[in-house]
Length: 159
Image 1 (cartoon, rainbow, N blue to C red):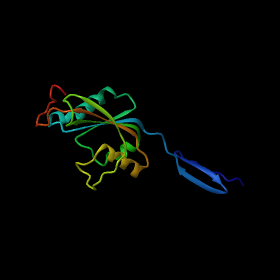
Image 2 (cartoon, rainbow, N blue to C red):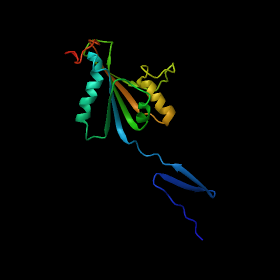
Image 3 (tube, rainbow, N blue to C red):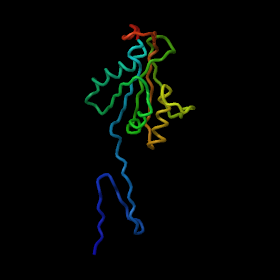
Image 4 (tube, one colour):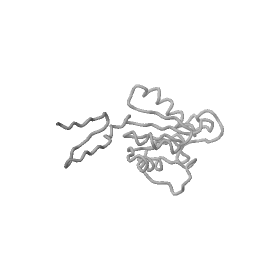
């Protein structure tokens, strides 16, 4: 009588010394790039990332890109970061000449405190993605130097 092995989609099996080894096959990342734009749309230039991501979502709608627009970074974003190859964080910055755009690579760095709200950073989220889900994307942060963080529902002209 011949033994047969039933293979389910998403699983692979190997016969090794008569033992059946089953492992979950890791599929390719669901999307290649994740863009996260964040900021407060009621605090003038702080809304740069928020506005930029909303515009990018319409322009990149048919591409293999996911765009998230949010008010602040939260721990829940780590799961989505674990499923992409590249991540782009877009935000406003208090440093530099207003209107200047800066780009820098960012890597995983666990936060020094255990507090999650208002202290999530791109590097902390990357560290969480790796620790909780076993993978993290390559990532960059794009910022624009802000002129104003005052209460207003529009960006300053220079931004």
